[in-house]
Image: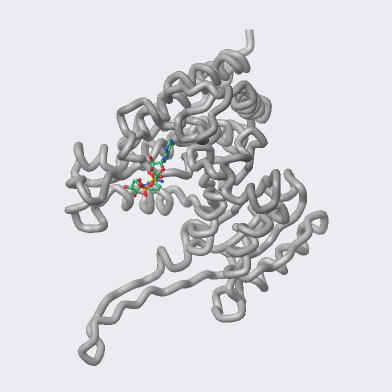
Length: 367
Ligand code: NAD
């Protein structure tokens, strides 16, 4: 008998609701593995507050090495309540979020893919719905993740008696070209349009960005390209998100625009994300944080993490059918009226309110 494929998955459950949502994603992955005929070997990894509690730092070098031995890493979320958690009394480089920057850099995760998809069943949660009747949009933001302002040199000094802070934003053409390629490749598998977002009327980095994206576009004659200034893009996302297929942009613009795109779906608990390097390796996590306000109450929506697991099967393990199977199970779950509390509007109608663990089980039932 042919041997079954074994997927090696590193798992960072993390903090807050992280362990609850990851438990449900693993449940769904295990069901999918049984149905589609593959095995999974999980390795638990500590990051964020959970790692601080054990090792005093948010991410150890040993954990990075273990992550590299996996084909992909599935993550819940990290961090705590900044006002009450002792983790935030530590210097910035030892706080939970520093682990996230370190893992992105160490694993070369330069491309962050964040889909923003409005499920027809959830259209009532879209804050834009009332302006324009029913909406349906399906876009993906490809954000550069290891360059720009967040990784540039910075310092604070006193200049002429005034405290003065400086951050620097740098991009070279190789960094721009590889993220542009990710965007064009992604568009090829979708509706074939890339909108490149920059601030080329002001910034040199943006002028280089625009020039390199234009050059890269020559390799993809089947994909159309347009450019948009970031301030306009922020408005267009609210006014007419249907116009977008793939948006590609630099790190900080992408950080802000992807949160805006999440918000217009009206349901932060539904949004998956993938951070990829130049191999098939990726880190997959929901777009939301660790929701300390509802942690441990079995209230969290696990769907963003479950959909991140589907992205993992598609992008890191090339298991398109298994990924489709999870996405279809989520669709059927919603069609049949199952909702965690965050998805239930005031007029609940026939909806069935379920806990985090019940939602995972219902989705398993549709696999
Ligand atoms: P958050 O996303 O954790 O929570 C914002 C609101 O959305 C809260 O009311 C929360 O209850 C709700 N929410 C979030 N996810 C939900 C889910 N799956 N189901 C139901 N409701 C959900 O954002 P925050 O409160 O600003 O941040 C909390 C912590 O998370 C902070 O420490 C922050 O640094 C961290 N954080 C981590 C990541 C990450 O791990 N990548 C990302 C963002 C924030």
